[in-house]
Length: 98
Image 1: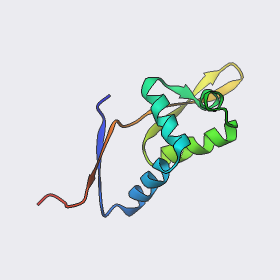
Image 2: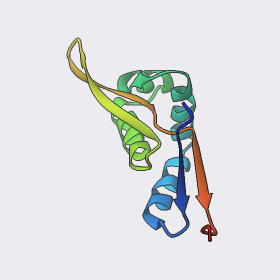
Image 3: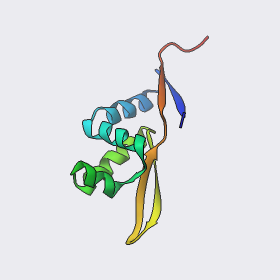
Image 4: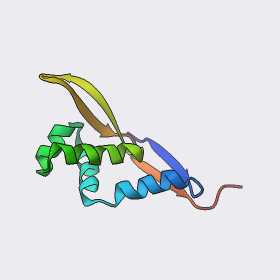
């Protein structure tokens, strides 16, 4: 994968979204699962034994932080939302380069 981004300390909204995304054990587990394979929201819910609605909210939070990508794919009963990792590294730049 080797996709990397840097966030400047001044990018407050990005840092807040990242902090929120990483502040949940469930969301951390979703990230670990997505290291291995892409998963639909329904698959995430099944594996974690949580309601699909909860899995969807966790996915939305991870998307807002830019940690995962989701796309809709055709399924047996309509479209399904499939998630994958977007990044494998984030640098926090506290002191900007001169």
